[in-house]
Length: 566
Image (cartoon, rainbow, N blue to C red):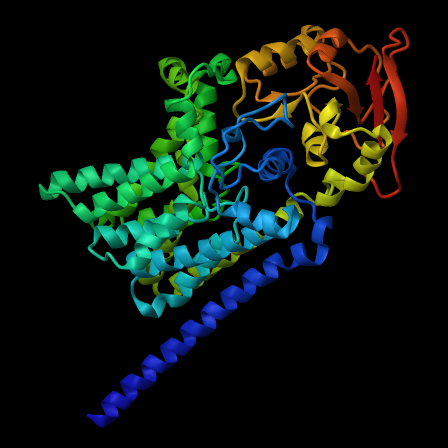
């Protein structure tokens, strides 16, 4: 008997030691993944589209305005003559603490590391507790969790990365585990993720599960209902300005009221659905290229035992249906219904795709487990191959690799160059307004300038109309730009028919605007004084464009022409 217990104790010790080694290796891999961000510092080429040109500068404006963790609901004057704080950030967002405490770049990186660690912990806990419960498969649990953790998660909150941890907490409570840490996870997610980006869709899905349970068991799971209530209330508190704006505040008409999305043909809608299902979505990368064949093999192996894997078949069905919804949202009568809702509420209803990464990696884990169990030693080799290929594919899509040809964080915002512009003008920045040409207004905003233009998800329809007067002559020359602005308008930019939709004219460009047609009277009426342009304006017949100075340096990405409009 003593020998038996000694052997058992030794086995348990070996397992614990193996678990610690595996977890340590995963954490080390995450550390290596983020090492380039630390070595390169602000020289890192971060994603610009829907990131540096928007989210990062929105957070900076929000923090600078004093609205963070404040009841102040006055508009942020620096952008577009005043935008609502609701349009920029959630009022009580924990990610803002790191941005405020460590600066925009290092705060961004710290948030990214927290996202990755949370993604790893959440996926590991979810898999080990609810998907792959046998301890002998700990290597599979850790590896799948690691690959998920290395996805290039968008933005700097837990909106996608934290979904597995949130699911883990909800499933625990649903099963009767009401330990304190589950409730803490709910509160963490309420204050560290976006309701309108992912939280709303997770709550909707969990509400469906709650209703299913109630109908099946013919009783209400009170703890589960309480968990839905706690998360919902947490989001109400963290997004209170959003609820105030749409439920209490009156007299405000959003520019979204005029949004018109082009109707898709059936074939185009189907292609959009197919692309989401096979390739994922830009704001919620799953990079599941090698997961798809693993799932296909899984389906073939369980074809005679489908009932045992019902939950995973339902997950796959969810991925299929939400992909179809994503594509067909802009087709026929479906578009008409959701347009009416979307014109008032700033929620894109196709965002169920924010849950896709979590579900794809859950399917990946169960697929590899079945492959190992059903195919023996060949299955182990095949599963290992899938893991290596998927790991390599995810690492290949590292943010710094994908954006290696883009300007770095430092070069994009170029604080030194724009500091020279600020000093040259020599006035308090709040006393004059600027407009950008050939570069995103985010660059000027980041450097403290007050801009007439900007990129934001929600602003006044009246302002859109007033700004449109400035660019109306240019829009009339380009039907594509006209449709882009009139039917969407979130990029309230100084569109030029000669520049198109390119906002990255670096200093080596030879582009010149030969025939500017902006309404300069409308520009001045809106408070405009200067145009910060990344291209030269050759306005020979218009003396109102007065070139004040050209700014550039050997290290700068931009060459800026500063024009005063007289």
